Structure formats: C-alpha cells, structure tokens
Image (cartoon, rainbow, N blue to C red; front, side):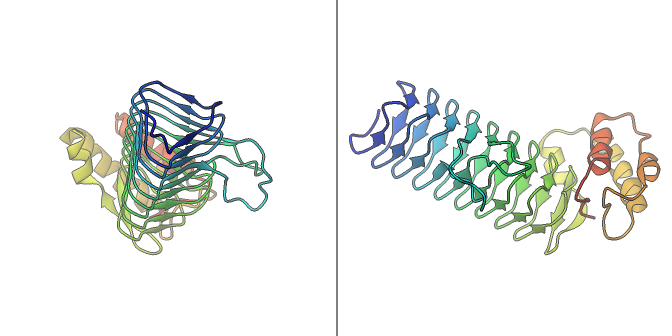
Amino acid sequence: MIDPSALVHPEATVHSDVSIGPFSIVEADVVIGSGTKIDSHVVVRSGTHIGRDNHIYSFASIGDDPQFAGYNGEKTTLHMGDNNIVREYVTLNRGSTSPRGSGVTRIGSHNFIMAYSHVAHDSTLGDHIIFANGASLAGHVEVGDYAILGGFSLVHQFCRVGAHALTGIGTVCLKDVPPYTIVAGNPAKTFGLNLRGLRRRHFDEDTIMALKRTYRRAFRNIGEGGYDGKNDQSDDVGRGRIENNSHCEALLQFIQTSERGVIR
C-alpha cells in the first residue's frame, strides 16, 4: 500500500506489496523488493536498491549524495540486502567517485541500524550487524558480520571493523578493530575478546580457548601502539598460527592485511 501523500516516481521499481507511508519520497531509478515497509517522511534517493522485508522508519535518508567534497553529481549507488531494520533519522549515503571510491555503498542483510546512525560513502556492511544510536562510519569503512558498534562510536575513513567485534559507547576508532575483540575509549584500546558475544553465537569452548591463545600471542608480538601493517612482524604474528582453527586464522589474517594498523 502506498499512501496517497507519498511521492513515488513512475520510473521507480516498487514491488506490489511494499508499504510506503505518508509524505515519503521515492525517486527514479530506485528498486524496492517485496515485503519492505517504509514509514512516513522517508526519502529514498535515485540509485538506491533495497531488497526484501526491510523496515525503514520515519525521517531516514536512504541513498543520498555522498558527503565528499569532490562529488559533482555523478551516478553512484547504494545496495541494501534483506531483513534490515533502519530506525529514525538514519543516513545512508551512496558511493562516491573519489580516487579510491567504488561508487557503491553496500549494506548486507539482517542488520539493525538504530536512530541517528550514519554510513558514509563507499562503506561496506556485512550481515547481522548492530549499530546502537548515533554510531557513525566515515567513508570507505568495512564492517564484518555480527559486529556491534556501541552508541556514538566513530570509525575513521578506510578503517575496518572485524567480525564479531564490539565497540563501547563513544569509542573513537582510528585504526582497524580486530575481529572477536572488545575495544573502547578515545582513542580506542582493546579489552580482550568479546567472550559474551561469542558464546551468544554458540562458539564452542575449544574455539574460544584457541582464540584466547592466538590473541595473547599475536598481541604480545605486536607490541605497544598497535601493529601498523608496515613493520616486518609477519613472522612474529605468524607464530600464533599453531591453532587448527579457521577463526584463529581469520584473526591473524586480519592483523597481517591491515593498512592502517590494528587497535591494541
């Protein structure tokens, strides 16, 4: 059902069972999949593709222009998967045409993005992610599956937030957040593994113990100040690679491929 006061461009592709509330705007070159509900006063800009069974709450801005000084109206896109919840006043920007821009911002599936959160241009979100109120990403940020960003957490451009990581309220992330860890503070520091989160996701105790051993070895070898991704420490970090476990490998691989360095 589309409310009579909503403005839906005739060149938008909207599934017949989509609900669009009063005074919402859907521009041309928008695709909205089956089962999606758009509440009142939502703006969905041209170039936005929204999947199935999403719920977008009032006053959200979906697929607006990238906040990039060099942007000059080029055609870019935002792709959202299925079963996402996007709460009030969230802003999700399209990709950019910056030198390192992909032109696409990607939001996965089953994510819960709470009120006043922001996802900037060219960022990529995986699945089952939670943004608490006011969490914000700068451009070109990657967030792994099952990560949780605490309220008003800030992530610097080109940083990565690893899978199953947790940031505390008001955390400022200037480097990559290692997967499976808790980080907090300004600037952020690590506070061990996200044990409660891992157990909630049914990680077995053998895997958790293996991650603990790998975390201790890897971060002991990294040294103070964080691994900057440039020092020749790959052998040292690799010494932690004695666990026959894919999650341990993922943690070490994340550290070794960091460009900005990892939070320690």
